[in-house]
Image 1 (cartoon, rainbow, N blue to C red):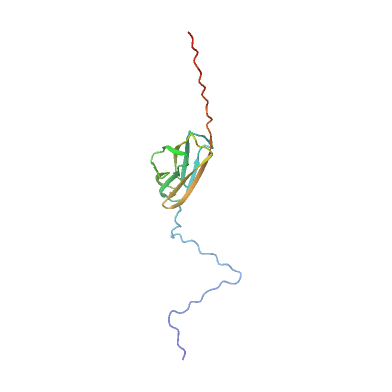
Image 2 (tube, rainbow, N blue to C red):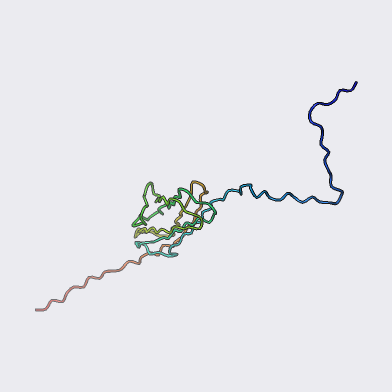
Length: 167
């Protein structure tokens, strides 16, 4: 005798005729959508030329270009060689040659603009590249740079003039 297979009976599968394509199923309206992503963008601007000994101000703009809130956003900037921090927007701190600011949360489309002012040493020469970064707890790091050529200050000559003595 032949033993009968145990379990559920097989259900016949309908195969469409050759050349007929079955359309994909319609999306389930009750299914949740994919989660929104967070994306940061950063732009940095500053002068292209700066005089040795002068103040240099950089403007940094961080924007959430994604569809979800960017959480715990931190903006940082490295102090370039031959420069010292002279001023910053509120909330910045200086540590180990890096200026940092906690920018909190940025909703989708929101932006934060900050300014940093540095003083360039009088004996500086060449060029300076300044790099700013931004990162969020739920977004990768982005960076922007600004490069300035240092213009040397020409020395002024002082000529002593002897006063005329009359008398």
